[in-house]
Image 1 (tube, rainbow, N blue to C red):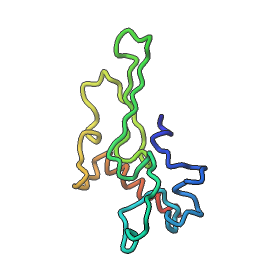
Image 2: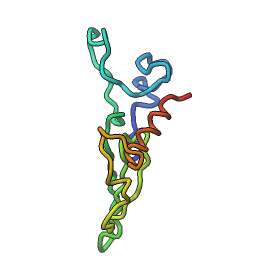
Image 3: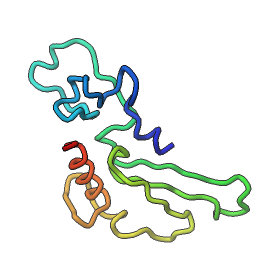
Length: 129
């Protein structure tokens, strides 16, 4: 499921990050930003990947059928886009989560927020230097 959330047609003719895909720009980015000047005159649309740069958070829940109580359940949480984030496991027995996972807002940069840490790493990784 983690790979599924990060999918942008890799290895297919629609690969949004392929080196021969001009829409990916000089760094072959799978991200498709808002249309620029003149781009709206071209008919059609970009492929829409499952993994998007603008995803605010992603969840994967794993539970075991044979568990007698909630000990078998784990919530895997990725702050920000799954393309550049880390899925962190949280047991459903937790009564609280680390401060970095409950703080932060998309419109206010905060170095103590897991969301913003993931965004910064994703932006740097997208340079593909």
